[in-house]
Length: 64
Image (cartoon, rainbow, N blue to C red):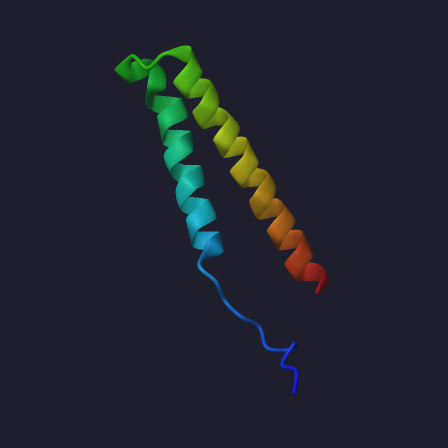
């Protein structure tokens, strides 16, 4: 018996949101605490990737 119709809830959205918030805070507070350009750029890139993943996840769930 195959149980494909059961919706499973994972912790991935919570993890994506957590990483997004942390990277955005690092990116925003970086100049205030004296962080260099490279760590701020990495944090900003991570934030953009998390936003893209959250949007992709949302769109895929709406289609299913």
